[in-house]
Amino acid sequence: MAGASLLTLLDDIASILDDVAVMSKVAAKKTAGVLGDDLALNAQQVTGVNADRELPVIWAVALGSFRNKLILVPAAMLISAFIPWAVTPLLMFGGLFLCYEGFEKLHHSYLHRKDQPHESHQIQQQPEITDWVAFEAEKIKGAIRTDFVLSAEIIAITLGIVAEKSLSTQFLTLAAIGIVMTIGVYGLVAAIVKMDDAGLYLSQRQGQSVITQLNRKLGFGLLSAAPLLMKSLTIIGTAAMFMVGGGILTHGLHIVSEQIHHAEQAVEAVSVVGPAFALLTPSILNGLFGVLAGAVAVILMTGIQKLRS
Image (tube, rainbow, N blue to C red):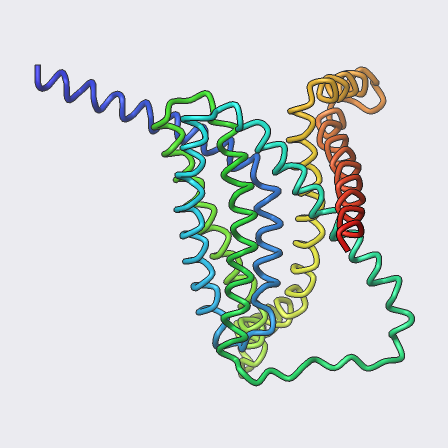
């Protein structure tokens, strides 16, 4: 009897872990857009810090991110246990926030380019930093605050995926996603931030051997790629915010999701385009809907701010 009970327990554990693995894989795909933006934002947050203090700052922010997950995961479990009907509204609010944040970036970038010709004749001087300890503390605080918002998006999206599963599967999936995303994000942020240092080190290698020359070429390549990578992450992250946020909104609005499904079928029926482009149709339409929703949200928030002032 004891052996049979043990085997049953092990079978239940294996079944739960299998569900967690499947749900974590689905959640990782759904949260990829937030992850791209998380990478870009956190890599930008540590810019300006002394080179020898970049990794300690990233480590401090990573610990803050783990603390954020320790708050968000239990909160998500309480919502799922006591007010499960709130999962969809919270998820849609998170999607709308993603669209709002993405459009605000585009709007800010447009205003910056618009004002730049008038400021081109002025030499912009960076303020001198006198208290580096306070500067780092402010950087860490801002990065942890940004991480809390993005972590809430990741947890909300994951909770929406596992909402129909058991509480144990929900908890393990949320915990797994929180740990994997934190390690993955800040590990990649550390690699991105130190890429230029690695390139500088390799480019300064001395010697005439083939390996040394290859190291120097690799170093120069890393130095050239670092700023392009940062810019690409920002662009990809912004586009992904619209796709993920718009996808969340359209999934909650059944009328819109049905129209997108009909559009996908119509594109697939066109033989010239073929089914390959039909697979991209939902993402493109979700992204366009996200841009529209973000524009409306920015207009409303701007109007509210003007009324308050």
